[in-house]
Image (tube, rainbow, N blue to C red; front, side, top):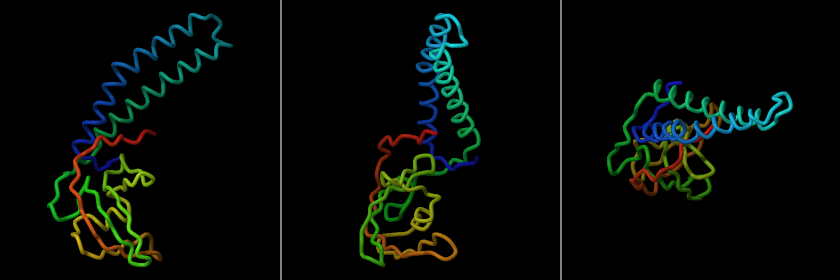
Length: 166
């Protein structure tokens, strides 16, 4: 996997693992036990549904543990006047003059519909390390690219964005 994660991403993942172990797991086990007590397992939908929830929880725990174990930890720190992880950036598209605001995050938190773009996306890669007033070329693929001008950078505190669930 070797995803790039910040210390705050890892902390959130560890909190989710703890919650799943201490809250979700006991409830899932109780649900399985209760459904099993209803009798014939061959026609017991509640039993299969409870087992599915239990197995999904265990799978999510293993996934998060593997992500933490194989992650490459990156710094959230950046200079006050340059784009870095967890910065909110307003850019102006040179082609049409439209302005958009994005927050640069790691891949596990990326969600373009909410304005959270990954540091590994073409736009995220292009913006990192640049300053206000810089015009940056974003290469989407070999034949498509566009230019954006950085209008504003805000050093935002980590506001509890959720880790993307799979």
